[in-house]
Every structure is written in C-alpha cells, then in structure tokens.
Length: 172
Image (cartoon, rainbow, N blue to C red; front, side, top):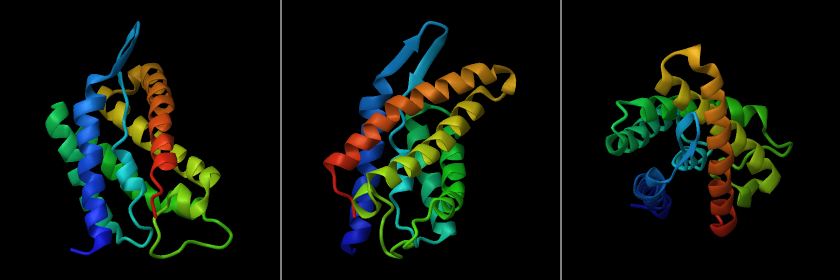
C-alpha cells in the first residue's frame, strides 16, 4: 500500500474513532434544542485528493457515513449526508477554484491553498453536510427553524475542530 493510501486509511480510522468515542459523548443542550452534535468526520471527504474519481468518492463517503451510523444507531442518516456532501464536493471545488488552478494530485487543504481558501471551502462543505444531516434526521421541513438552528450551532463548533486540525496537522 503506498503512503498516500495509507495516510487516507489512517485519517479515515482516526476521524471515525474521534467522532464516535469522543464527540458522540459531547452534545450541547440548548433548552428546546436537544442533542446538537459536533461533526468532524466530514473532514475526511473534504481532504481526499482533488483528482479522485467521483464514483470512488461516493463509495468511500457512503462507507464513512455508514461507519458512523453503526455507532450512532442512526439508520443511514450519516451515510446519506456524507454521500450528498461527496456529490456536491466537485461543484464546490469548481465554484471556488483559485486563479492558478488546482494541483491534480494535491489535497484541498489549508497547507496547499491557504487558510482563507480552506476556510471558505470547509465552511460550504460543512454547511451542506450539517444541513443535510439535520434535515434527514428531522425528516420534515415542519421543523425548519430547529434544523437551521442546529445546523448553525453544529457548524460553529465543528468548524473550530476542523480549523484546529488544519493548523496542527499540515495535510498535503
């Protein structure tokens, strides 16, 4: 197994372990909002190489979400949100493509494209993922206020974790 693949396998396992062993136990209760979670595992989808085939990306995202679903007993909610996030990744990358373009083998990280670019990229991707997750979890837009509030709170706290990860670990 080459080093790039082994790095992704280690990142996959590490993020899933952090999500299910550490962050699952941390939930914020804001009165009428129960169980607002931290979601750090979408970072794996965000950091996959830019030139990865879309079909491979979707399959990997499905298994990532399914791995989290097993521990959360959420019946595919994380898997569905992960697949939607992976599907929208190419669109987001095209919309925010730097003037000089992308390195085909590079990972879309703060180390490769700068902290400001990564902040925009991760923000859009995490908002898509969080909104999809809470929408599918509620299964009705009757609760749109709760969905939007949970999305916002989850986004704020999850982005703190993601940005700390980018600052501490120099991902290539």
